[in-house]
Length: 117
Image (cartoon, one colour):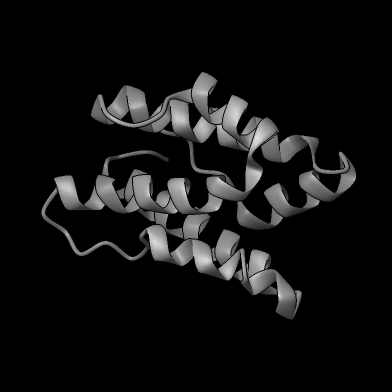
């Protein structure tokens, strides 16, 4: 089961830690998704990708969250294309913020449907 993470808290932590918390977030959410579904990157691979080729992570993360919904035969609120909010959405400055709000919100909603408090 995954942990529900407050979107505002995550954004504040990312700012306060100068982005280091984003690596922690990627590691934790990908590990939780892999533990829950048995599929996906897992925390270690996600951390390596986030550190070395971070541009792919918004696409992969949104895709994996969407796949959680698809495995339960539910419409996915996010998909790999949601990553477009991050890049090239970063050119409108708020794009990455919109991506995170959508993706983290969808993940939190999924965990709630699975009984997380």
